Length: 236
Ligand code: ZN
Image 1: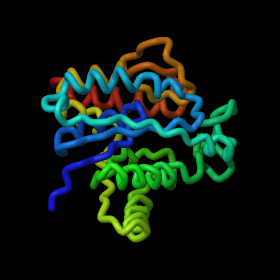
Image 2: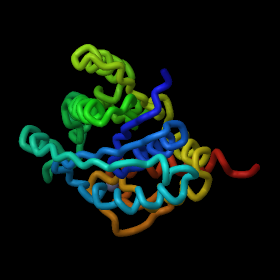
Image 3: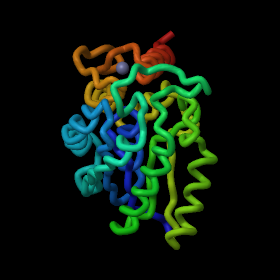
Image 4: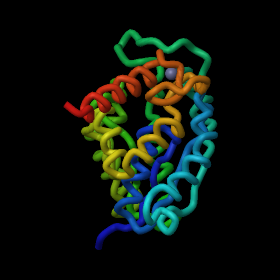
């Protein structure tokens, strides 16, 4: 049987917006999910509705394919962790080399909750933007982690759910290119101006690569990737 119903972890950032476009291009029915976990960059939750609406009109077939949007609150994340993503702490590298934006187990929890929702909604595939190419050292973004969790979820829930991670082997430049392949310049422009990636929630100035403070790790990665993408598409 060919799975045709997907649930996209759609936070409102560049990666998850690209994943959503990817999912809309290949599944019959696509639902979306975001988590409210006390993130400092809660602005990403605010940009989602407009982004979803634009995606619906921009991508062919999306009106029929794009289904319900879900928002699940996970306040326990902020209760349990004191990291730079959820508390007012300066972003820095920790002694073990991981950035202090690392929320231990975040993607494991997100995917487990997503699997529970998919079970209830009768959805066969989870789509997530995890990426091990420039993954900031987050161990829960590794391909091995996701595959192993996929097995554990199916064993533990007696399901045949599949976790798709279309960005796993892509760098940020390739992610921009994928957006272009999926929706042309219009989708690139929408992702540029309509998504949010900055860890600090800064949305004052629109740079070439989008909104953000320009100096946090997420902004740096996004800006560098966009420059590389532009360089790769420049005419000789
Ligand atoms: Zn930033």
